[in-house]
Image 1 (cartoon, one colour):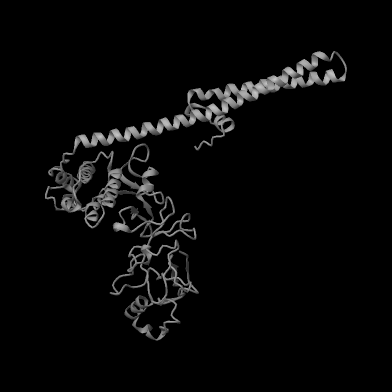
Image 2 (image 1 turned 90 degrees about the horizontal axis):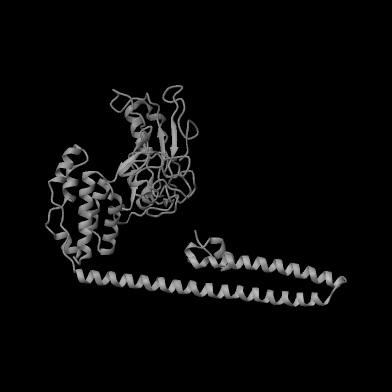
Length: 422
């Protein structure tokens, strides 16, 4: 992701004195340690291929072949100055036998998949500068690699134009964005409505078209658990939205999930002829007016939930509640046993102190004067102070009468040796 101007990586003073070219390298490297993506940016005033206009802003040559083709067409007289390289000598020749490597070590990174994107991503000075962070496949929120499984439903890519015609290009797990309140419907100052907020460039992206792809994706998935996982993610994204299209899409997804939970097979689910809004939404197209898309959604009857076995569901709920109460009773019994042992131990400690105090007082009563009497008096006073501290400790331990959940953390850790996680 480094860039610069002029020599030694780009021409200077060509084709005219003062003309300076720019260069840049991308994030990918070869097995030999050389950069795979290398670009040359010509001066803006150079002619286009038609010789009737200048090159467009941001034009870049991505290979030696494209650069040579341009020079031969735009500057026919320059043939004699073009160097001839072998594949080993050519600094812009990509050796197809080299192994391309992602910065994050992800062998399924999108940057390794040809052809390269026509729109160059815009690197940032924070995450992209990290040696193990890849703009193409590292989540901007958790820095872990995204998954392209099931057509990459689980992540979103920011395609907003950042500057100089380059897109932001950063990606994020949708689950990470939901947990960070950067996706879905979020109130407050951020104000999202079934949208994604990019932390890198502050751009917003509509997630309804992204979720709308989920049905077609699910048709290619073999396992019901994966289908439910995909659809549940769509529910999380759309829940709470005030948009009509998002509400209709949410209703359709929830109805589909209900049918799955009621025993409908995947084959029967996809062969169902009941009209849904999935296809109508995708056919409305992003280029059409929003009013047309909303109207198409309102004209469609969503899937109605299928009836289910009421008694079986109630029995299942009863079993769940029984297990919860059983676990609660066991937890309470465990707490009771811990409290019983520690409180009785503290009582025995105080009993020992009281017995020692009685013995010392009895000994003191037999010594009227002398140094021994003074020493015994000191011991008695120390014992009384020790007893007062242990009595105070017992009173604090008795706070467990309110339950461990309401007992101060410090008491549980110091007196009952329980580690309380935040």
